[in-house]
Image 1 (cartoon, rainbow, N blue to C red):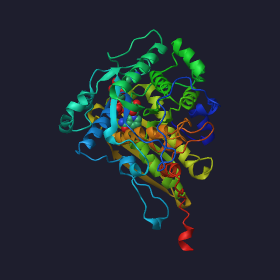
Image 2 (image 1 turned 30 degrees about the vertical axis):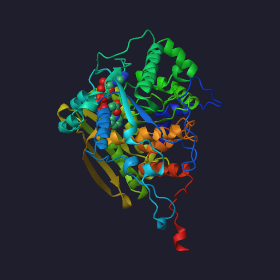
Image 3 (image 1 turned 180 degrees about the vertical axis):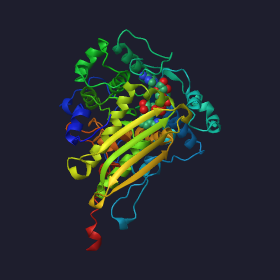
Image 4 (image 1 turned 90 degrees about the horizontal axis):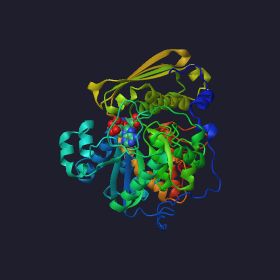
Length: 481
Ligand SMILES: NC(=O)c1ccc[n+]([C@@H]2O[C@H](COP(=O)([O-])OP(=O)(O)OC[C@H]3O[C@@H](n4cnc5c(N)ncnc54)[C@H](O)[C@@H]3O)[C@@H](O)[C@H]2O)c1
C-alpha cells in the first residue's frame, strides 16, 4: 500500500483504531488474583521491589527469534559470548552533571533480574525442542548450539493455541483442543501456573514471539473484559490466538509484550485487564532491521530540515517469518506496522513543504535461499537548499533474529522491573519502552513517539525518575555561569 498526500491526522485515524475506542477504566477492581505481592521496597531503590528469586520467561512461538534469544542468554551465562545489542546489559545512564563523572551501567543502577535467574518455557505448534528449533532456524552457528545442547533440549514446547485461519502458511500437530476459546484460555492459565510451580519462578513475563497473524480490526468483542469473555465463550472468530495468550497471561497478573505486529494487546479489553491486574503491556513488533534504520535516519533529516519526496523499501528474506508474511493477510498486519513510522517522525502536518508530498512504500518478498539473513534495500529521495534533489541508498545485510534477541532480553528484564515498581505496574501501557517497537503503544488520544533518540531519552529519564535522580534536559547553561 502506498501513501501519498496524506495528512498525519488522517493517517493516525485510519491506522490506529485504538485512538477511537480505548477507555481507561477508573477504579479498576481485580477480576483475577494477580501474581504474589512484590517484596517491600528498600532504602536504595525506593518503590521498586528487589528482583528476588527466579524470573520465568514464557514464550508463545519457539521459532528463530525465541531460540536465538534463549540460546544467546545461555551462551552469555556460560561465558561463550557477549550480550551485544542489549541496553540493559551493556548500556549506561548518565547521572547528574557532565562534570560529575557518574555513569553507572543500567543493570547496576536499577534492580534487574540477573541472567542466571532466568528460566524458560514456550508454546509452539511444532514439537521441536529449543535445540531442534534453533538448529532448524539456522541463525546461530551449529557448533555454538551443540555446546548448549543439554540446556536447549530441556526446553520443550507446550501445546499451542492455534487457528490456521490466522496464520495461513503453516500448520502443525502440537495444538490444544477445547470446545471454546475460553476452554483454551483456561488451559493456558493452567500451563502458566504449572510452569511457575515446576520452575520455582517467583515472577513471570510473557513475550509473544509467534508468527504474524492476519490483519484484524478492533470490534465489538474487544471493547471490555465482559464482552471479550462472552466472545471467548462463544468462539467469536475475531479473537485471534495471540489474544487468548494475552488474556491468559494478564488474568494471571503476568506482563505481556508483543514481538509481532498483531493487534493482540492494542485493544480496550487488554488495557482494562492490564490495569486491573497490574500486568504491564507495551507496544508491538520488535524494531529491528529496516525500521530501525528508518527511525535512525528520518529524525536526522527532520533535524536538518531536509525534505523527503519518497522512501521505497524492499526486503528479501527466506526464514519461516518470511514465508508467513508471503500471505497477504499477515503481510497487511506487518505493512501497517512498518508504514506508520515515517509519518509520525516527520510530522507532515507541521512541515507540509518538506514532507507533505512524500511517497512511502514497503515491500517484503519471500526468497528462501536468504534464510534469516535478510537484505533490506532503501531508496530515499531527499531534497535540500532551493529544492535540489539528492538520493541515499541503504543496503542493509542484516540478521533479523540477531537484532531481535537483545530486544527480547531487555523487554523481559524491563517488563519485570515495571511489574515490581509501584509507580508503573498499574499504568497498563509502558510508553517508556517504545524504544523497542515498530508500533509503540501510547495513551488513548496520544500519538506514539517513533524517534529512536527521543525514545531512548524517555527510557533513561524514566529510570532516573524511578530512582529519584534529576532528569537530564541537556540545557547545560550552568556550565557557563
Ligand atoms: N526477526 C525479527 O527481527 C523480527 C522483528 C520484528 C518482529 N518479528 C516478529 O516476531 C515473530 C517471530 O519471528 P521469527 O523470525 O522467530 O518467526 P518464526 O516463524 O521463526 O517463529 C514463529 C514461531 O511461532 C510459532 N507459532 C505460530 N503461531 C503460534 C501460536 N498461535 N502459538 C504458538 N506458536 C505459534 C510458529 O510455529 C513458529 O515456530 C514474527 O511475528 C515476526 O514478524 C521478528
